[in-house]
Length: 558
Image (cartoon, rainbow, N blue to C red; front, top):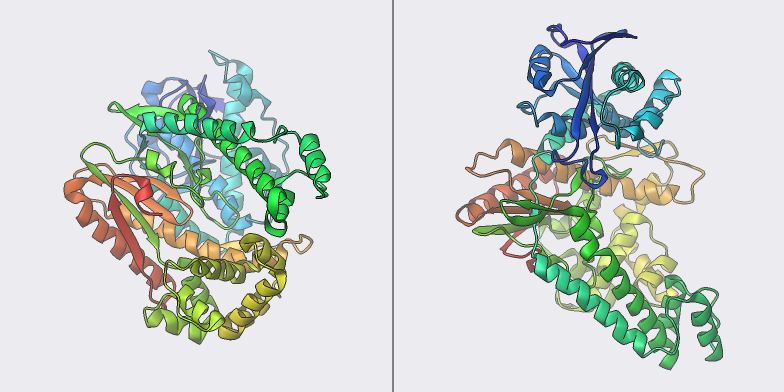
C-alpha cells in the first residue's frame, strides 16, 4: 500500500474509488448524526495500491470535486456521507456503491454479519484487525498506526467492491439501483420526530406508579423467580419457570386467584419495563433540539432485517409499544404549525400473498373492494361480523399464520384459544384459499433461496427449524419492505415543496411525515398516489389501497 498525504488528482470517468472517514470522540448513541466528534481524516483509494490521506477538513470539497465522475465506494455510506456533509454539499448521485448494503442484498440469510472485517475475510481472505477503531473514541491525534488503519479501510473497501461487482447478478443489481440506493438518499434526509417531552416523562412516572400499586397487592416479589414458583406451588399450580410463556399458560388455562395473580405479575413486569426502557433514559441518550423543538432522530437502516425490511436504532423506534397501548405514540407530535401524515397500506401482506399465490378467491375479494378479514369470518363463522368485532382481529392472526407458516399451536398461543379450534380456523382458511395452500407447499420445497417480487434474495438454511417458515415469510415481508422503500424514495425524488423532506419515521408497515398544515392535504394525496402506484406496478392485477390519516399526534391512527 502506497500512502500519499495529499489531495487526489482528478480521476477517470466511472472508475471505482473508495472513501472512508474517521472521527475522534464521537457520541456512540449519535454516530448517525453530524453533531459530535472531531474530524480525524479522510482516506481515498484510487487503484490497487495508492491511498490518499487527507487530514484537513477544509480539503474535503476539493477532494470530492476531483472524484465527482467516479463511482464512490463506501462501507456504510450513510455514516460517511452524513459526516462529510458537514464540510461539503453532497447531492444524491447514482454513481454510488455501498459494500455493506450490497453484501446484504447478495447474501441476506446466508451470512449474519456484514461488518467491513466480515466482507474482507469473505472476499479477500484477509483477516482485518479492527481494534484500532476503538482508539478513536478517546484519541486526539493521528499516529502512524492509526493512519495505516484508516488507509487500509479504504484499500480493502475498494477491493471488496470490485469483487462484489464480479459476483453480483442482475437481480442483485436491480434491487440496489431501483430500491436500496434510492432509499438510502431518502433516509439520509429524514427529519427528527417531535416529542411532547413533559408527557413522555409523566408517562414514565405513571408506569412506575402502576407497577408499585400492583406490587403492593402481591404477597411476594413478582421479579423473583423463586418466590413466584413457590407461591403458585402453594396454590396448586406447578410452574416450570416464571417466564412470560409459562405465566401466559396459567392465564389461559387456569381460573380464580391463580389466573388473576399470573396476570398481575405480567402487568407489573410490563409497566416496570416500560418505565425503565421508555423514560428518562431515552431523554438522556437520544433527545436533541431542532429550532427549540425536542426531537428524537433515529438511525434508519435501509436494510435492517434479513428480509430487506428497514429498522431503526438510537433510538429503536420499532420497539415502542403499540399493540396494547397508544400512550407512547401520544407523546410523538407534529411541530408547531404542522400536521402529521400517518400512512400505511390496507391489508398489504394479504394483497401481496394474493399476487404471489394467484389465488382466485383472494384476488376477487380485493377486486370487489371487500374486507379480507370480514370475508374470512363470514366463511369460518357462517355469519357477517363488523370491523369492531374482536373476531376480526382473530382473522388477522389467521392470515398472519398463513403468511408465516404459523402452526395450530402457535395460533392457539397467540389468540388464547384451544388448539383444536386454531386447527379448525387454519383448515377452513386453506379450503377458502386453495391457491394459497398450493403456493405454500411449493415455497416450502425451496432449499436454496427465495426471492421477493423485485428479486431480492433470502437464503435459506436447511438445517434451521425456521427454514420452511422463512420460505413463506421472506417473499411476503420482503416484498412489503421493497414496496415501502420504493414509495419513500419516489416521494423523495418528487418532493418539490417549500419545506424539508417531511418523513420522520418508518416503523414496519407505517410511514409518518411532519409537514406544514397548508401543505398536508396536497402531500397526503401525492403520498397515497405514489404508494398505490408503486404497489400495483410491483404486483400487477391486485388492487392496493393506501390509508393516510392527518392529525397532530402519532396515536391518532393505530
